[in-house]
Image 1 (tube, rainbow, N blue to C red):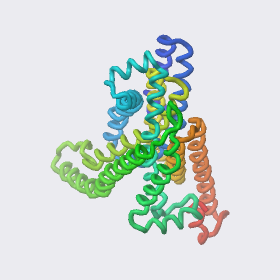
Image 2: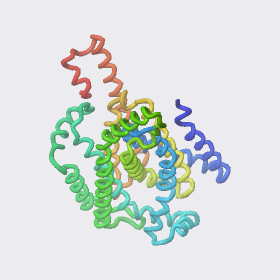
Image 3: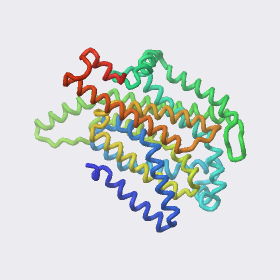
Image 4: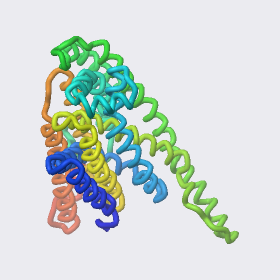
Length: 382
């Protein structure tokens, strides 16, 4: 099962590291390896959240996610995105941007640094909305009950998450953005941050709205497809599973790609702290992206999210932390390793809480744990 799911990731890792050592030497080998580990640690929460969405799709769309999706993730975000940053910032063509990255890495890094406030504002607002919509939703199972119960009550207020996100954006524009870190010192980037933050918010509302709309229709479509399958079987016709979930799965796939793009912001920007070599960066982050994809599918097929019910909570708290860190980095530099450790810690804590919950429920069923009246508290993570 592990080899089947991670086989391509292992193969790409071996080929990528071997190519780096052969083409550029052992220094490149080490940097590509570090970047791969960095991407995995920063994007583990991405895999957990993706798994929660991917498990709603059929096998066909899971394969699409691992094939076409990985091409978009690797080439779209890990290679094209850094080039696009420079091309837009320097107002040059993509080919010129690549030449600039290869021939003048310091100038390339300066351009990326100047673009960071806009990137952080866009990605930070998108991720913040994901976090807010999660914690304001009333869920049967709660991890931090003392916090999630009152937040769920507040979540009944319409558009509360949007209001809070806008308040956070205004606060960021009036504080961090007034002394934004750039290649030439600290500058006022308030207007840039406001514009980019609003763009991130609009992107979330549009893509998330489309996704939610079609997600709500999945059950209706699957029921209709099931009826058609039964009818086709009765008539002796072949049944294809390609159409299952139809438009719903397609828009969920688009939603996954936008999520991956947002999660990739910190990895791409953090990579510049390690190297300015665009091809080393693309190779290392691309290898890491392969593992994130494989890990997502593994979580789905193993039913890990069903067994460890707090993992999704931990991942969303990690998203909230990442959103805050991105906004803070508009003015202050924060090590990408700290960012990665925060996410790993929150997910590890949620995993440990899930294990404790499972043991408590097993003990309760065996008559050695809490009484049935206390079982709800065990399930809610108290």
